[in-house]
Image 1 (cartoon, rainbow, N blue to C red):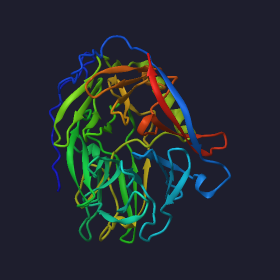
Image 2: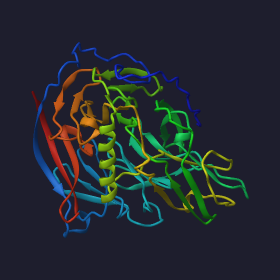
Image 3: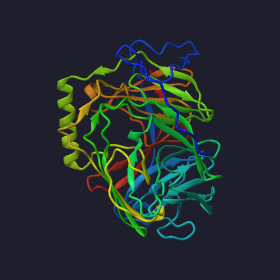
Image 4: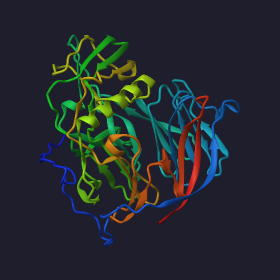
Length: 443
């Protein structure tokens, strides 16, 4: 069903508060105090296997690894976006199979944009226009329409009940014949939607509206649509970037609850499948005030990243195309838009010299949930630069300990029995996947 976006009341935040959003109740049922000084822990790990080569069998040569995911048996599913296929490795590092190949037929992939792996080893391969479904043996079982008018989950995680969780949904509302196409981004909406996509119904519904830092002005990015009904290109010139905006980070617990970080302070909200906040995990760590020196450090970092071509695209978390005017500028008139005919979506970043800054650096830079339901909370590095400390917390608020910034990092994927997968790049720019096992965290 189509859900309405919920408008949140935004309260004033200061560095003395732990963040904005739902107040919730700290979930410290264990009585363990997560406050006080950091307690460093030492990870004990063992190597399991590595896969990826410059030369070798076809299946072990990767073009562009977009994601890796484990299933409950410890099998690793490696999504190679360039090759439009999935390579499946056993928990011992043995090759099992490849799934999919480039093409337009059943079970064939054309420009995949995402892969969601369920605990039983089945998965959904997401593309514009359709979602391909596969069983635990990698056999194609059917497709689900992914209609851009109702939303395509471009950044999706598998939920225990067989649905998908999305924080980045692509939408296009089809214009009527002869009308100019205008575009808006999520910046024009109230809050940031977290949605659930049903693979039975092929439709999404709103789960929760995350808090969003208010904009300094109402100016929208400049965007345009060009082409015909048979081939459409979308381009978007982003506003100058704004630094230190709180990110939207989510992780899925085994009971279906979603861990959500959307604020400036140290607060992880636990959201149930009914959309209610059932508790929070917190530590009394205040945000850092942004100074002129910090601003210049951030400008230098982004200049260097852009020069190396490694900076991530800035801006909207999804694009919506409609047949009515908006505050953004747009051009192009088409009689209709078929999502299968979208040939390209280009994002151009705004000027670093004109970038603006939030007043505070968010405490949390990322989170992830492992298969033991521990929440790994990566804190922002000092003055917003470099890797930060990583806290390991439990959903009931128990503080396990903190990993140093030069130690073990959050992996690209957690697996059962302590498995952790990292995507690495060697001096020849050859991608590989290294799998280790976390044996323990010792104080």
